Image 1 (cartoon, one colour):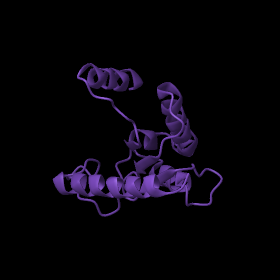
Image 2 (tube, helix red, strand yellow; image 1 turned 90 degrees about the vertical axis):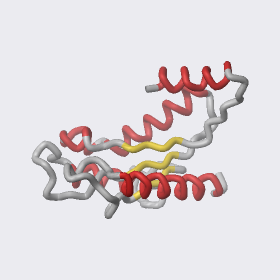
Image 3 (cartoon, one colour; image 1 turned 135 degrees about the vertical axis):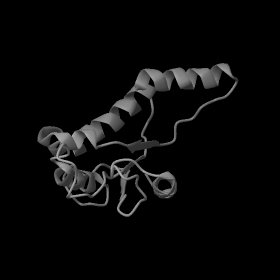
Length: 146
């Protein structure tokens, strides 16, 4: 992921632009809800991801906005740890007060977003809702005092 991201930044530079990374949007988690171990350590792994991006890009800090995995407790059997990962994601939000909270990180609840019939992928309306919610959350984080 980082290699591709750095290639994209380099392409912008070669095109005469000066890219500035101001935040990280992250939407993932369904795969991590397949295993209890990865679900139970999701907050720590999310913090590691953000810290690694900061380090790899030589940044001082980086606000992080991430979407919560879908809420279906009647999920397909392969998503056995969905409730665990959702709890970890909620705890990772900077406002949670939990030990797992990550400074300058905000979780976007995806409850009620439009989905395809597979209950795993967003339809066009759900994608729009996700994008708007993430943009608003990032704007809030960027306006906060460090």
